[in-house]
Structure formats: C-alpha cells, structure tokens
Image (spheres, rainbow, N blue to C red):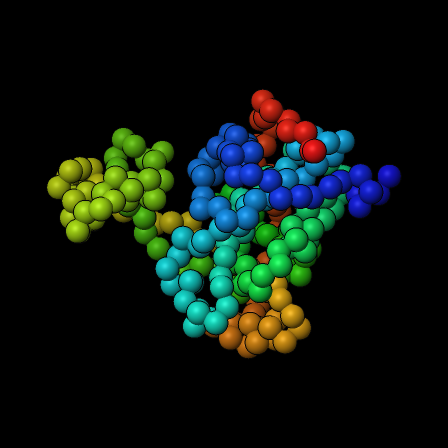
Length: 226
C-alpha cells in the first residue's frame, strides 16, 4: 500500500504533541506552537510536526510585516516508517495551512544534521545562522538559554537581574550554528514576492553524513484518529 493511501495527516491539539516533544525529540523543550499536525497510521499517532513564532526577533521583521514569518520548530516521527515518510508528512502539513506564510526551519550542526528533509521538499537554503552566544548557569548547563532568561521575566533589566542572582556562575556559551532553510506558502505571485524579499543569498544544499538522534522512546498514548 502506498504512503498516500496508508498515512493520514491531520491537525491535532497541542497537548497531543507534548510527550513527543519533551520525551522523543532531541531538544526536550516545548516551543511556541500555533499549528500542530499528527501523522496517523492505522488510526495511531506516529509523528508530530509543529509550527510557531520564531524565537529570533531579527527574523520576524525580514519581510517588512507584509508576510508573516513562522518557524517549523519540531518534527519527530517513530522509527521504522516507510521511505519518504517525512517529506510526505511535511508537504501534507503545508497543504492544510490556508494562510500565506514564510516558514523558516533549521538543521542543527551540533547533531550532524544537514536538513535533508528540507532539501527533499524543495526549501530554499541560505547558509548557516549567525554566530551567537547564549546565557547559561554553571552547574545547570542543562537549562536552555530560554529557560534561564525566563527566570528574569518581568524584570526591567533581565540580564542585570540574572547577574545579581547568579554572579560569576552566569556564563555565555557560543551557540552551535545551524543550517537555515525557508519555505513559502501562498499564491504564485506571493511566492515570487517572498523570494524577491529574501535578504539572504541562496546557496547550494549542504551535504554530508547525517546522524540520526535517538528517537526510540515509546510514547505512552498512541492517540486514535476519530
């Protein structure tokens, strides 16, 4: 049976993604989510894809607010699926989005990812993200920069508050650079305009040996499709 006949992609509630993201995806963090989709096989959830507001403030204003920018921020599926399952999943998610959008996504070089799923679905590659340093706390390096910054939420000077709280234990670590890809959803004219407004040079796709992260965690609830 073909993927198209066997696999079903539909919108799901955010709470249905939580275990997949916190336990199965390598980042182990919940991102901002506006769209969430599930990949179903035999009425059982076998993968999730989420799209939300980009963390980067710089990226949000690249298209002068004419086109909304969002980030494909999580994509995780069970092991052992058919070949081309990921590309089918992503393409079906985009077909269900009825709004005109610019989508950005990243492939993490620290995990030897090159973004082959984005290459397979014809995204535009624009090179590596800019060098950047994140705040961490000594002895708590497992806490993501966003989690550390959230500790000072509501404070007038968040970094100063963190320095007063943690002193010399507040450190900066260079963030691994990531491969950056863009995808355009909209009419032919919109896509043409989005591409013209792209502020980055379009580059050849990167190649190399891909390293799969461990996604063997078995979710407790395999949600049924109704």
